[in-house]
Amino acid sequence: MASKRGQAVLSDLRGLVADLATEVGTRLPPERTLARQFGCCRETLRGALQVLEREGEIWRHVGQGTFCGPRPLGHPIREQILVQGASPMQLMQARQTIEPSVAAEAARLATAEQAAYLADLARRGRSARTRPESEQLDAAFHRGIAEVTGNPILLGLLDYLAGVRRHAAWQREWELTYRRLGVTEFTERHSAQHEAIAAAISGRDPEHAAAAMLRHLETISDAMRGAGLPGLGQ
Image 1 (cartoon, one colour):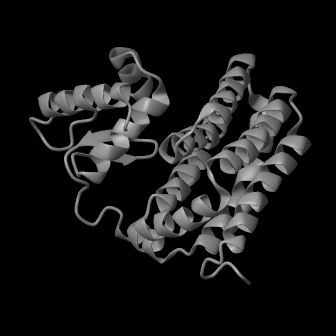
Image 2 (cartoon, helix red, strand yellow):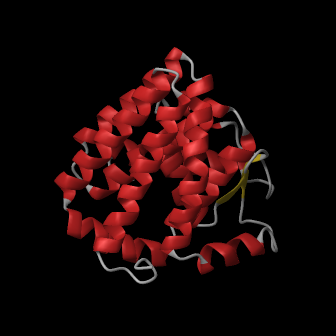
Image 3 (cartoon, rainbow, N blue to C red):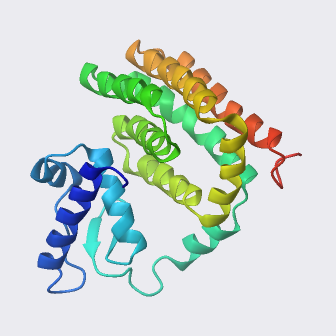
């Protein structure tokens, strides 16, 4: 949320939440409605939503929506324990198991508009020059693929895995990898791989989409092993 536009959207969202939060649990409008209302793209909106969620101003539940106020007590404690206990290797194993299949399904279902959206995210990722910008576009790209499937369960799984990556322990370890790779190499390598995934989805080629996604995730795992992170050397 470092950009002026991001800060403006965050401010607008805070105002909306304040207006709606006369009763805890009030549901916010859907993301597409909010993005249109604030005149921003959905990835910028999601960045603002993440900030408010971390602050306890809102909470989200896949398939049900976004709600004002802190997450209700006991909801879902088990998921929080899993997030805290997951190692980087376990996260990457989960992603390598799930995301190639999601990419293949996206290749079967993507409309021309959806394929163009993914290609644009990959193109913009190549122009990113800071870590926050790279990570924001990377998250938007992977989530965008899940959105193509139209399956809330798959989307929920990808959102859950993204939540693990936001955990402090993961961020500390990923920082070592990012420094080792450098901004240019990180951006170039990821952009080329994102472009290959997007091209396979656009070409309606499930097999190549799955293979390109797996190569991409294996590259991340290899980079993390090269940084000597705990639990990644097995």
